[in-house]
Length: 116
Image 1 (cartoon, rainbow, N blue to C red):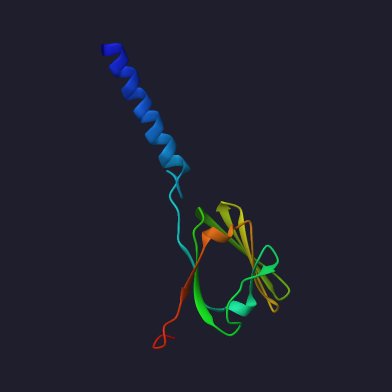
Image 2: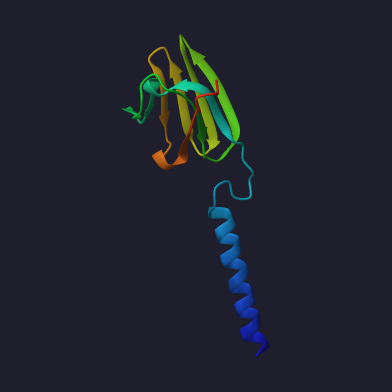
């Protein structure tokens, strides 16, 4: 009786730990990544433009694991690398491109009529 109870308890702990480590940021912690006041017409994911009114200004939240952010520049391009998710944001005169980010990890917050 005690052995089967211990097995059930151990299995419950393993399932709980696997759910925690597989969810969002896991045990390593994370930072919310916000891009404020960007224009929809200037954004693309893996080279594909996001749809919406091209002049619509929005805030973008990336739901990726990011506990280290590395920023570098080359000419007029700025590259932001997020670790450990390996997401990359490239801001250039042509717009903003997200790489290594799934569309469901991008949250767009639309501005209301009275904001910004």
